[in-house]
Length: 150
Image (tube, rainbow, N blue to C red; front, top):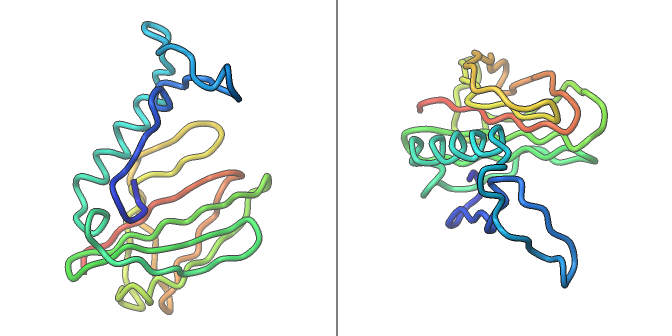
């Protein structure tokens, strides 16, 4: 929902449908047994994608990448979104150079969503931009999506 192109969800992923290699590559949809939190997560990500034009048509800029960490941004003339991915089994403080998205060097971004292995939250949180960077504490295997108007 944050990468360029049409968002794609493979049949049943939104409900926690299991699958493996052929012949068990896809089972029937789990009607009445869907993973409700996973369904809600997909609804929230679709909502975020729909509400922010820069996620539909904005430019893409890689901000930081290192072992088990990736940060990239989507931006247009009206707003900028930063996506931070901690693919480590440990919590880490992570930094992203958001000034590269046109964000003022001393400003505030709003957290739209934070996901981790314990679930997700859409509780807004203000994240300070200091000297063009955001610095956040990220749980293991987590993703944070931040946004600001330009």
